[in-house]
View: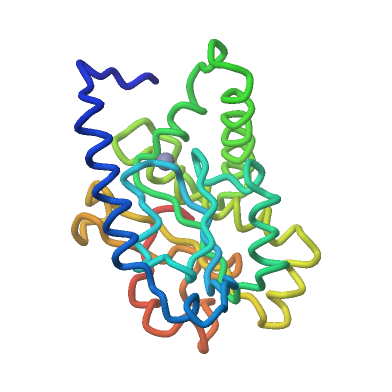
Length: 231
Ligand SMILES: [Zn+2]
């Protein structure tokens, strides 16, 4: 589970950080702030995997637009409080749960992680519990050990996180009142869906996983990116 590094040049790393923070400073969107409006008013709450190949800016510019919760395996239970803050206090009209192909957290939770520190075990326990629940809920799922195994499980994991969200009475009510749209997405890092690397696919709308059941009024043009392996 450990990534090994040969050697690290801290000067390079710090310089790279300086450059990045300098660019942010220069491009800081001043309009609202200069007039004294410091409030955040994001439109999207995003729950995604901490995996560095799944940066939150796959949704475009995130500044004051995307309220982000990241943890290993994009788990509701590992970031529930932050998530509820985005939905119940910032009132973002859209909630996105994004998983990705071949998720390492799901792979790790499927293996032996007893030697890991307690807090890491806790988060992997959340992933494992999600996977156990997701497997039970899947209508049709081949749990075979091939190269798509952890992509299929990542899809089911997104469904399971949306189930957890809908178990919250307040969230369910927002969805029923059409004040909140919940979208499940898969980011394809490996061209597993054979549409090209880095593409995003829509896999779930408000808990529905069958595109024929998707409501007509939403999600507009994104319905064209519907694709999934599991049922
Ligand atoms: Zn991951």
